Length: 61
Image (cartoon, rainbow, N blue to C red; front, side):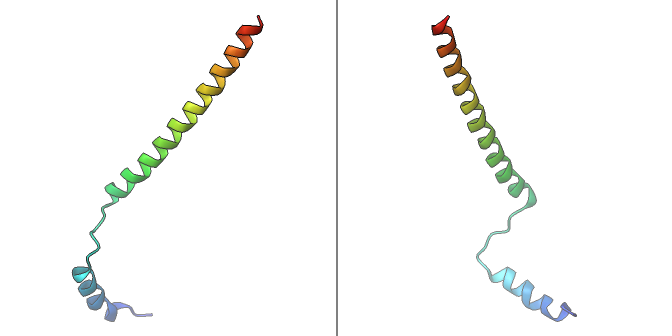
């Protein structure tokens, strides 16, 4: 399938389109922020559970 005939139309569309170009660095930055936010929530939940367990355990001693 030859798509070379569509190349000029695609280039013209990209030039006239209002969608800003996104670099791979920007995409990776967004993905990295989501992953870091997930780790922060997981760490907060783990610390809360551990703290609650220690409070209950220490009061029974």
